[in-house]
Image 1 (cartoon, rainbow, N blue to C red):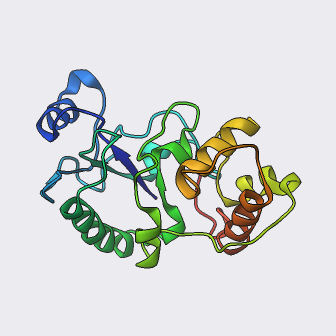
Image 2 (cartoon, rainbow, N blue to C red):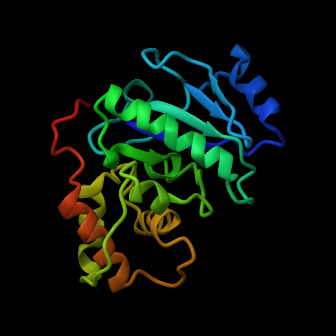
Length: 205
Protein backbone atom coordinates (compact mmCIF):
# COMPACT_ATOMS: atom_id res chain seq x y z
CA UNK A 1 0.00 0.00 0.00
CA UNK A 2 0.94 3.70 -0.06
CA UNK A 3 0.65 5.84 3.08
CA UNK A 4 0.48 9.62 2.65
CA UNK A 5 1.73 11.96 5.39
CA UNK A 6 2.37 15.63 5.95
CA UNK A 7 5.57 16.81 7.61
CA UNK A 8 4.04 19.36 10.03
CA UNK A 9 7.40 21.13 10.14
CA UNK A 10 8.53 24.70 9.48
CA UNK A 11 10.29 23.85 6.22
CA UNK A 12 10.97 21.01 3.84
CA UNK A 13 14.67 21.30 4.65
CA UNK A 14 13.96 20.71 8.34
CA UNK A 15 11.80 17.74 7.47
CA UNK A 16 14.52 16.29 5.26
CA UNK A 17 17.07 16.66 8.04
CA UNK A 18 14.75 14.80 10.41
CA UNK A 19 13.97 12.03 7.95
CA UNK A 20 17.65 11.52 7.13
CA UNK A 21 18.91 11.54 10.73
CA UNK A 22 19.28 7.99 12.12
CA UNK A 23 18.87 9.31 15.66
CA UNK A 24 15.26 10.31 14.99
CA UNK A 25 14.28 6.74 14.04
CA UNK A 26 11.85 8.02 11.42
CA UNK A 27 12.14 7.85 7.64
CA UNK A 28 10.09 7.79 4.45
CA UNK A 29 10.61 6.66 0.92
CA UNK A 30 9.84 10.08 -0.57
CA UNK A 31 9.55 13.71 0.43
CA UNK A 32 7.79 16.16 -1.88
CA UNK A 33 8.61 19.86 -1.47
CA UNK A 34 6.05 22.66 -1.97
CA UNK A 35 7.57 23.57 -5.36
CA UNK A 36 7.13 19.98 -6.59
CA UNK A 37 10.70 18.84 -6.05
CA UNK A 38 10.74 15.10 -5.39
CA UNK A 39 13.35 13.75 -2.98
CA UNK A 40 13.94 10.00 -2.91
CA UNK A 41 15.15 9.08 0.58
CA UNK A 42 14.74 5.29 0.88
CA UNK A 43 14.63 2.78 -2.01
CA UNK A 44 11.12 1.46 -2.55
CA UNK A 45 12.18 -2.14 -1.95
CA UNK A 46 13.51 -1.33 1.53
CA UNK A 47 11.52 -0.76 4.72
CA UNK A 48 11.11 2.84 5.87
CA UNK A 49 9.99 3.84 9.38
CA UNK A 50 7.14 6.14 8.47
CA UNK A 51 3.93 4.51 9.68
CA UNK A 52 4.50 3.41 13.26
CA UNK A 53 1.92 1.46 15.23
CA UNK A 54 -1.37 0.96 13.45
CA UNK A 55 -3.34 -1.32 11.17
CA UNK A 56 -5.15 -1.40 7.84
CA UNK A 57 -7.32 -4.40 7.14
CA UNK A 58 -5.31 -7.50 8.01
CA UNK A 59 -1.98 -5.65 7.84
CA UNK A 60 -0.61 -4.93 11.30
CA UNK A 61 3.00 -4.18 10.26
CA UNK A 62 2.28 -1.32 7.90
CA UNK A 63 5.92 -0.26 7.60
CA UNK A 64 6.78 -3.59 6.00
CA UNK A 65 3.88 -3.44 3.54
CA UNK A 66 3.89 0.16 2.38
CA UNK A 67 5.64 3.03 0.63
CA UNK A 68 5.61 6.23 2.68
CA UNK A 69 5.27 9.63 1.04
CA UNK A 70 5.83 12.78 3.11
CA UNK A 71 4.34 16.04 1.82
CA UNK A 72 5.90 19.33 2.92
CA UNK A 73 2.93 20.99 4.61
CA UNK A 74 2.37 22.50 8.04
CA UNK A 75 -1.00 20.82 8.52
CA UNK A 76 -2.99 24.06 8.40
CA UNK A 77 -2.26 25.40 4.91
CA UNK A 78 -3.59 24.28 1.53
CA UNK A 79 -1.35 21.84 -0.33
CA UNK A 80 0.64 23.63 -3.03
CA UNK A 81 -0.41 22.89 -6.62
CA UNK A 82 3.12 21.87 -7.77
CA UNK A 83 3.33 19.48 -4.80
CA UNK A 84 0.01 17.84 -5.72
CA UNK A 85 1.06 17.54 -9.36
CA UNK A 86 4.29 15.83 -8.29
CA UNK A 87 2.39 13.50 -5.96
CA UNK A 88 0.07 12.42 -8.77
CA UNK A 89 3.05 11.71 -11.07
CA UNK A 90 4.72 9.69 -8.32
CA UNK A 91 1.61 7.64 -7.60
CA UNK A 92 1.18 6.91 -11.31
CA UNK A 93 4.67 5.40 -11.26
CA UNK A 94 4.47 3.55 -7.93
CA UNK A 95 1.05 1.95 -8.21
CA UNK A 96 1.59 -0.17 -11.36
CA UNK A 97 5.16 -0.97 -10.30
CA UNK A 98 3.93 -2.63 -7.09
CA UNK A 99 0.41 -3.57 -8.26
CA UNK A 100 -1.20 -1.26 -5.68
CA UNK A 101 -4.93 -0.67 -6.26
CA UNK A 102 -6.41 2.79 -5.61
CA UNK A 103 -8.14 1.64 -2.40
CA UNK A 104 -4.76 0.90 -0.86
CA UNK A 105 -3.56 4.49 -1.15
CA UNK A 106 -4.41 5.72 2.35
CA UNK A 107 -3.58 8.44 4.84
CA UNK A 108 -1.56 8.12 8.03
CA UNK A 109 -4.73 8.92 9.97
CA UNK A 110 -6.52 5.98 8.34
CA UNK A 111 -4.16 3.36 9.74
CA UNK A 112 -3.29 5.10 13.04
CA UNK A 113 -6.40 7.04 14.11
CA UNK A 114 -5.39 7.00 17.76
CA UNK A 115 -2.19 8.91 17.03
CA UNK A 116 -2.28 10.74 13.71
CA UNK A 117 -4.41 13.19 11.74
CA UNK A 118 -2.26 13.62 8.61
CA UNK A 119 -2.58 14.37 5.76
CA UNK A 120 -5.45 16.28 7.36
CA UNK A 121 -8.70 17.97 6.30
CA UNK A 122 -7.12 20.13 3.59
CA UNK A 123 -5.76 17.21 1.59
CA UNK A 124 -7.75 16.69 -1.63
CA UNK A 125 -8.55 12.96 -1.67
CA UNK A 126 -11.32 13.44 -4.22
CA UNK A 127 -8.85 14.93 -6.68
CA UNK A 128 -6.75 11.76 -6.48
CA UNK A 129 -9.80 9.54 -6.78
CA UNK A 130 -10.97 11.28 -9.94
CA UNK A 131 -7.67 10.24 -11.54
CA UNK A 132 -7.81 6.66 -10.30
CA UNK A 133 -5.15 7.26 -7.67
CA UNK A 134 -7.36 6.70 -4.63
CA UNK A 135 -11.06 6.10 -3.95
CA UNK A 136 -14.06 8.26 -3.15
CA UNK A 137 -17.57 7.25 -2.00
CA UNK A 138 -20.79 7.75 -3.92
CA UNK A 139 -23.49 9.61 -2.01
CA UNK A 140 -26.23 7.64 -0.32
CA UNK A 141 -28.06 7.07 2.94
CA UNK A 142 -27.88 4.04 5.23
CA UNK A 143 -28.67 2.95 8.77
CA UNK A 144 -25.98 4.33 11.13
CA UNK A 145 -26.11 1.01 13.00
CA UNK A 146 -24.05 -0.49 10.18
CA UNK A 147 -21.33 2.16 10.25
CA UNK A 148 -18.75 0.26 12.34
CA UNK A 149 -19.11 -2.91 10.27
CA UNK A 150 -18.69 -0.91 7.08
CA UNK A 151 -15.57 0.74 8.45
CA UNK A 152 -14.00 -2.64 9.25
CA UNK A 153 -14.91 -4.01 5.83
CA UNK A 154 -13.29 -1.05 4.07
CA UNK A 155 -10.09 -1.28 6.12
CA UNK A 156 -10.42 0.70 9.35
CA UNK A 157 -9.32 -2.02 11.77
CA UNK A 158 -6.94 -0.04 13.99
CA UNK A 159 -9.65 0.87 16.52
CA UNK A 160 -13.12 -0.16 17.66
CA UNK A 161 -13.77 3.17 19.39
CA UNK A 162 -16.91 4.62 17.75
CA UNK A 163 -15.82 8.23 18.27
CA UNK A 164 -12.40 7.60 16.73
CA UNK A 165 -13.95 5.74 13.80
CA UNK A 166 -16.23 8.66 13.02
CA UNK A 167 -13.40 11.16 13.48
CA UNK A 168 -10.99 9.43 11.11
CA UNK A 169 -13.71 8.75 8.53
CA UNK A 170 -14.83 12.37 8.44
CA UNK A 171 -11.26 13.64 8.42
CA UNK A 172 -10.85 12.02 5.03
CA UNK A 173 -14.32 11.91 3.47
CA UNK A 174 -16.41 14.64 5.22
CA UNK A 175 -13.81 16.99 6.72
CA UNK A 176 -16.20 19.83 7.49
CA UNK A 177 -19.09 17.73 8.84
CA UNK A 178 -20.07 18.17 12.48
CA UNK A 179 -22.43 16.49 14.90
CA UNK A 180 -23.19 12.85 15.67
CA UNK A 181 -22.93 9.92 13.29
CA UNK A 182 -25.68 10.17 10.67
CA UNK A 183 -27.20 8.37 7.71
CA UNK A 184 -24.88 10.20 5.30
CA UNK A 185 -21.76 8.87 7.04
CA UNK A 186 -23.28 5.39 7.04
CA UNK A 187 -24.23 5.60 3.38
CA UNK A 188 -20.79 6.71 2.29
CA UNK A 189 -18.92 3.96 4.14
CA UNK A 190 -21.45 1.35 3.00
CA UNK A 191 -20.65 2.27 -0.61
CA UNK A 192 -16.89 2.10 0.00
CA UNK A 193 -17.16 -1.25 1.80
CA UNK A 194 -19.26 -2.71 -1.01
CA UNK A 195 -16.99 -1.57 -3.83
CA UNK A 196 -13.60 -1.80 -2.12
CA UNK A 197 -13.56 -4.54 0.57
CA UNK A 198 -10.09 -4.26 2.05
CA UNK A 199 -8.74 -7.81 1.87
CA UNK A 200 -10.69 -9.09 -1.12
CA UNK A 201 -7.43 -9.36 -3.04
CA UNK A 202 -5.86 -11.60 -0.43
CA UNK A 203 -3.06 -9.22 0.58
CA UNK A 204 -0.66 -10.62 3.15
CA UNK A 205 -0.79 -9.51 6.75
